[in-house]
Length: 507
Picture (cartoon, rainbow, N blue to C red):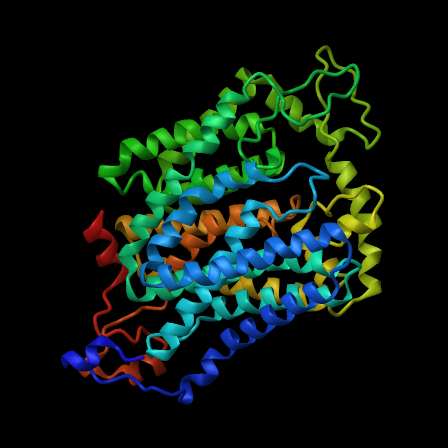
C-alpha cells in the first residue's frame, strides 16, 4: 500500500517492507498475538448453553466489526468521535442479572473498535505512517498484555478474557489517539466536543433520578440519600466519569472564549450531579484535581474552591454526613445523630476488611495473578476489591503491578514534559487538564475498581494522549528526511506542526 505523497512528488516513497523500525512495532505485533490467543482460549473453554450464547454474540460482533472496519477505516476518526459521543450512555443497556449471558452493548462496541483499530494500525504500518510508539504507549500495551496473560489460569477463563479485553481496548485507544495527535494535534478539538456531548444523555437520565434511588437498597431505620447513577451501573462509576468531564471543563474555561458558555454549562451540570452521587472517592479526586488546576494556572480558582467548600459544608449537610460515614463499622451501625441517613455498604472500613480478605489470594499466583475479574468470583461477597491497585496486584500479579506502575510514571513524565513546553494558551489549559485528570484517577484508584471501565478511561486517555504527544515535540522533518525524524522520536510527517499552534488555530 503506497502513500499518496509518493506519486505526487511531495515526499519520498515509503518503505514497503519492515526495516530497522520494525523493533518499534513489536508491541503492536505482541498485542495482536495476545488478542488472538485470548479469543482462542475463550472459545476453547466454552461449555453450557449460556456460554455458547455469549460466544455466538461475540462471533457476530467480531464478524460485524470486520465488515464495519472495511467501511470505517477510511473514516476512522469519525468512528472514534461517534464512540466518544455515545460510550457514556451504553452501560444503561447492560442486560439484567440472569438475563442469559449475552454480551453488554459496551463490550460489543469495544470489540468493533478493537477490530477496526487493528486494521487502521496495520494500514499505517504498511504505508510507513506509523510513528514510533512512546514509552507511555508501550506501557499501556504491556498492561493490556499483562491482563490477558492472567486469563489462562482463571477459574472462568472466558469471562476473564472478556474483562481483560476492556483493558486492552483502553490501551489500544491510547495508542491510536497518540498516533493521530502526533500528526494532527488539532483533532483534539473535535474529540473535546464529542467528550462534552457525551454528557447530555447521562445528565438527563441523572436529573430524572433526583428524588429516587434506582437499584439501591435501603438499610432498615435509615434514610435513603438518593444516590444518582445516570446511565452507569453504579453511582461511583458515574461520579468517576463526571470527574473527568468536570476537570476538563474547569481547565479549559479560561482559555476558550468561544467555548466559555458551553463549558460553564458543563460545570453547572457536573458539580451538583457529582455531589448527589455521594461518591467520596470521586469527591476527593475532584478536589485534588481542582487544586492542581488552581496551582497551575488560576489562584482565583483556589479562592473559589475554598469558598465553595465552606458553602457546601454549611448548606448541604448530607455531604458532611456522608463523609462522617468513614467512621461507620462494617456492621452498618451508625453513630448516634439527630438525623438518620442511608449507609453505603461499601464504607471505608468495609473496604479495608475486604482488602485483608482479598490480598492473600496473591499467593495463589504471584507472577500472573488469579485472572482478571476473578476476585468477584472467588469471594462470598461477589465484589471486586474496590481498589484498582489491589485488583491489579491480585488478579494480574507482579506483571500487572509493574506495568501499571510503568503507565503511571510514563504518563506523568509525558505530561510534565508537555507542561514545560506549553506555557500559555489553550494548549496549556489542555495539558493542565490532563494532569488534573491523571491525579484524580490515581486518587480514585485507591478506592474504586476502575481498570475495567472503558466508559471512564477512554475519556481520560483522550487529553492525556494529546499531552504526551505534545510533549514528544513533533517537528517538521527538514528536507523530507523522514528517517531522521523517526530516529529522533519526532513525527515522521513532513507536514507536522506544533501542537500549540494547531490547537490555537482551530479554537
